[in-house]
Image (cartoon, rainbow, N blue to C red):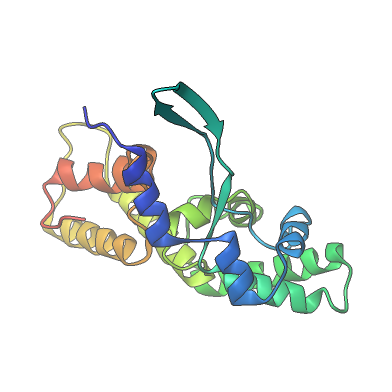
Length: 218
């Protein structure tokens, strides 16, 4: 069993996400305003909050001291914050949230371009996953195009793969499956070391690679 250290998880977060302070610097929007925009549903929330106690040990003994929580955001939040804050200059936050939602829905529909995904009938799915931080964990870019490509790839993998342990695929299906895996990998993050085991990368994509012995390694 692999043990994931806090240092490894922190290194991943530092590599793929930005701090609240960096988000403020890149957008010119105050931290309190960013919180207001997130609470009103205008922008996605922070992806990670890192918190905990630190133990200081010396000849005097051990002292467990609380550390300041640190928030981390997807780098794609920069454009979300800028757009929402600009709209908020002329609109109430509830109206900003509506405008942002409608724009996002249109972008997702255009990016899918009629292609089916497993949640096609649920018009709230994409927005809900954006607003609970799920897409920020999954996607290299926080965009409708990356979202669509990932979900189309997952749908293709689910359609071809079969739960039967003895299921086999023909050469055309193998080529299609390998293309879907490559498509997924182009737009999906590697996932944090402490979370990859519960991710679609492991449970869906990695499982298909192993089961059908695909000529790819992601």
